Structure formats: C-alpha cells, structure tokens
Length: 123
Length: 106
Image (cartoon, rainbow over all chains, first blue to last red):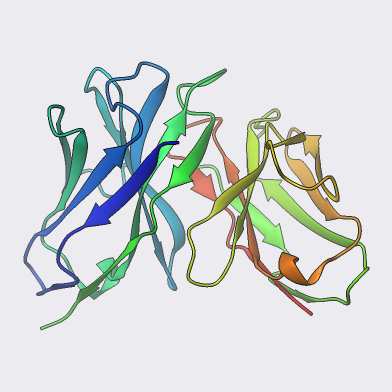
C-alpha cells in the first residue's frame, strides 16, 4: 500500500522560497505506471494542480506557476520535492503530494494523496 | 485552461435522500472526469473515475454519469458518513483542473 508524506516548513516569509518534500513508501517513484504530483488547496483558488513528474523524471508544470516552480527528485531516497520562489500571501495553502495513475492519459486520476501540509506565507 | 463549473456549491439534505451534483466543463472532455470526496481535515479521496466507474471499495450508493461537457454525481441514499465536500476533476488536458466543490450538509 503506497503512502505519501509531505514535509517542510509551515511558515515562509513573503518573497522567500517555499520548499517541500514528499516521501513515498510502499512503492517506487521510478515505477513507469505512475506520475507524481503536487496539488495545493486554498480558500481563494480551491484545488490547484501544480506539476507532475514522470517515472523517468520528465516534468510538466501548471503554466500559471511555471515561472516560479521547480520539481525535483531523489530516487535513492524515493522522494520528490517542490520549490516555489517569490511567495506571497496568495501562496498560503494546504500542499498535497499525490500519485497520478496512468492509463488512457498520462495521468488518469490522483490516488492516493498525502495528508497535506499547511504552508502559511507571512512575515 | 478547462474550467469546471460545479453546482450547487452547498447542499443540505437528510439521511436517505437522493443527492445530485453536477459538473460542467468549458470544453468537451469526453469522459475524462473524476469525482473525489474530501472530509474535514483529510485529503481528497477518489470515488469515481472515467465519469462513471466506481473505485474499488466505494459503496454502490455513489454513481456518476455523463460525457462531453455535462456530468452528474449521485448519492442514492445519503448516509451520515457521506458528509463531505465533493469535487470533480478533468484530466483531458493540462493543466488538470478541479471544480470548486459541493459541500454536503445534513
């Protein structure tokens, strides 16, 4: 049973960089059947997909965030990460990592999700 | 981006009621649509994939239908444990987008 767990600072100052890591257990991030995504949820924007990483390491970002987002991975540690630069209060959200299941499309659905980590942007 | 318009935004119902939620896509997305349930303090959980297929372990009182731009999610007999917010999500094209959710209350 694959499980995902987000970790990172809960408070980030405006203009600084938000960094989060998702530790995956019970499955490999190099399994070709899956993608790995970050999704955030805020009161203002609801659920917003941030980006996805394939088993081979190729990455796609949401164009609305692409100029500020970087995803990376550490395959020996079976984890992947998110960096979001120049944060503002509008980046305050619950951040989830999730596994994307491949099928008819590169990602058909997201399952499972991590429990999420709340990141607040404030001075 | 494909916009997903969900309605209603909130709904009050009684145990045993039939509940219907709709989701309209701004473009034809075929049946590339999923439904998730989110309980307070929890992450979203997949209930229905490909518009009408029930995820393993999900009670049969949940169902989905539709294709193209109009989709429906139904709970045939509402149970107390169904209190949650429900979201639709399209995966026809990037970026993946979600509806704004329907908060279900008893």
